[in-house]
Image 1 (tube, one colour):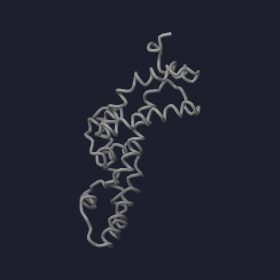
Image 2: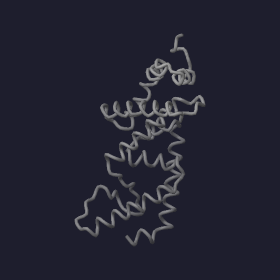
Image 3: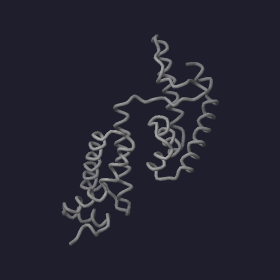
Image 4: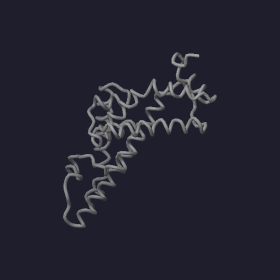
Length: 193
């Protein structure tokens, strides 16, 4: 049987049935695209290779553990796993940066406080900003995080999220409007910091 001609869902089924070659074909088929997406986020070849391996290990465990639900969406599922591993890596290795807003401060992460009181205030403000950011719809929050935390271009964000640039910029615009409204509604909270 020529496994290269089979669809992803058939290869997964063969792998579950005990054929190790089927998974090798899946890896060979999608390895390059998944690596490119990981590299696009992390911008480091060695780390991207590590995350790629971790992605396929996670996929193997999920399939073996019976946690994979075949709906003809193998590649999008693998890409989602890879993105989550990238975000986990970034959270562990880089302190979260605060999005800059004119209403509050200009990039808290770039300035260094000299007193303990100022450092505590900045931490509290950063926590409050995180709380407000987490109130946004998922797609808007992700675009803002990619743009401001990951410093990705709109073209890069569009590629990662599988949308066009116009959709991405629209989500950003609406997300920022909502954030500004929420900040204005909570201005007293921020001024107490």
